[in-house]
Each structure stands twice: as structure tokens, then as C-alpha cells.
Image 1: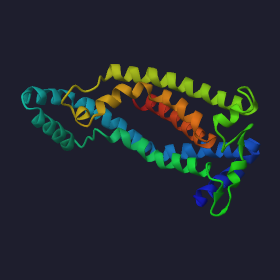
Image 2: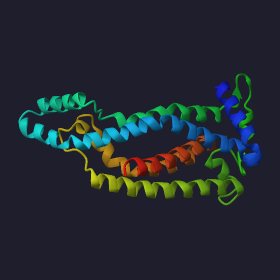
Image 3: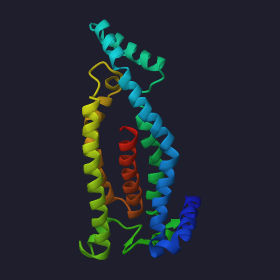
Image 4: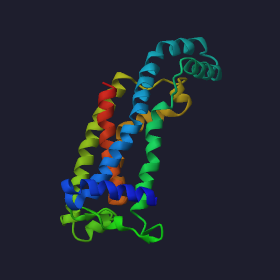
Length: 236
């Protein structure tokens, strides 16, 4: 964790001429963008996989007619088809799972008073009037429209706009490519329920931003915004 703290400090030093006291916040946004760039090839692969699964729908429908009276055999046949075509029903989850360690690293980094036995100097950094180690509850102590409170209101506004756009994008994608019926691989792995909930996922980001340290909230907001823009491009 101390190595990562040093990386954030170095990025903040590089960005300080442009962002001043908010350089560490800018460094976190830049770090998030770098993580997303590293994961982007997997996101592209997931998009190709989704399109490949859609292309398999007619063949799966034929398997469904063939094994209508034997659900277990149908499931095996569908999974075999996906394996034969090298299409994974869970490939779309991988980009999100790989970002979890980065989020928790930031969470712990800005929740710890000490790093490597020394005082955590990162807790002194701020985004405008809001400390990066603080939470919305801390900002509310100074009032909803205090300097720190306004920072959070700005973040909530960004998240709400992104969430609405993501909701509309997800609904449009689901309309163009409805969830697989019972017997498809997505249903075999319980992905049908995830698909139905997906349009509302971005709204959960509002809760995350409200309860985690501001540094981790910046990661979530940046990553969520990137995800929505990426989906709009890859699934167009």
C-alpha cells in the first residue's frame, strides 16, 4: 500500500501546476483512467462475446426444440455450444471484477491514519474544500451547502446524470437484445436476474459515493462514467 501511496503522491506532484491543491484528486482520476485503459481490451472482448452470444440464438433455439423434454440435456448442449464457439456467458463480468482491487486499495489508503508506520500524508489532500479521506457525513457537519457539501452535491449531480444515461442505454440494449429464455447459458448461470437489474445498477453508485471516502468516491464516479461511455461506443 505504501508503494501505491507513493505513486499517488508522484502523480499529484506532476499535476500540481495544473490543479493546485486538488492535484491528488486529479491524480486519482488519472489513475482510474489508466486502470480502465488497461482493462479496455477485456471490455472489447466482452462486447465481441455479447455479439457472438446473440449470433448463437438461432442455434440455441434449435437445441431448445430438440431437447424440449430434457432440461438438463438442453443445458449441457447449450454449454457445449458455447465452449465449441469459445464464447463465455460470464466474460462480461471480468472487466468489472478486475477493478475491485483498485477500488479497495484506494478505500483502505484513504481510510488509514498510518502507512508503513508513518502518518498518512494523503489524508491532508483535498478536492476543493473537501478532504479526500472524508465522507459525506463529515461534510454535512458543516452544512449541506458548505464548501465540502457543495463538492458532494456536484458529485451526486454527475452520478445522477450518468445513471440516467446508463439506464436509457441499458433499456435500449435490452430492447435490441432481449434476455435469453430459460435454457440458455445466461439462465443456466443465473445471469438472467443480473440482466434484469442491470439498468438500475448505476443508481447504486449514489449510495457508494455517499458512504465511502471521497478518494474512493472519485474512483467510482470516474469508472462509472467511463463504463457508460465505453458501452455506448462498443455496443452501438
